[in-house]
Amino acid sequence: MIINECPKCGCNDIEKIRSFMQWGKKWERVRCNHCGKTFSEASPEVPVEAVEYIRVRCPYCDSVETRVYKTLKPVRYHKCDSCQKAFKSVESCESVATPPNK
Ligand SMILES: [Zn+2]
Ligand SMILES: [Zn+2]
Image (cartoon, rainbow, N blue to C red):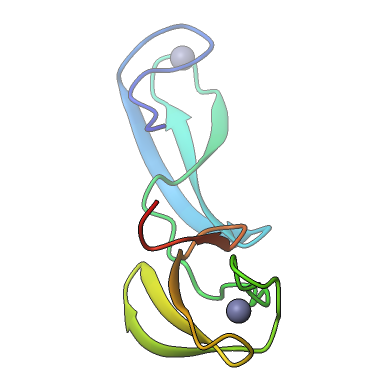
């Protein structure tokens, strides 16, 4: 969400003062030139700096002995060491393993 008007007075004469990092997110400090109120908002273009690596389970045999053999962001291609089947996952907050074809 991008601030384009003051949440207090609804005026769109607002100005970004500075941006800062907090809780792994980029925030914008914004000031209203009309009422002088300052507020902050999470920047929409949040740079992803680190992705928590969650071991992906094979959707066929439920093994965690899988390896990534190719990454085409945001999709990762995995191969299961146990059953030798290939599958892919999409990079997100929770790594979701999806079978290649239903
Ligand atoms: Zn205002
Ligand atoms: Zn498997």
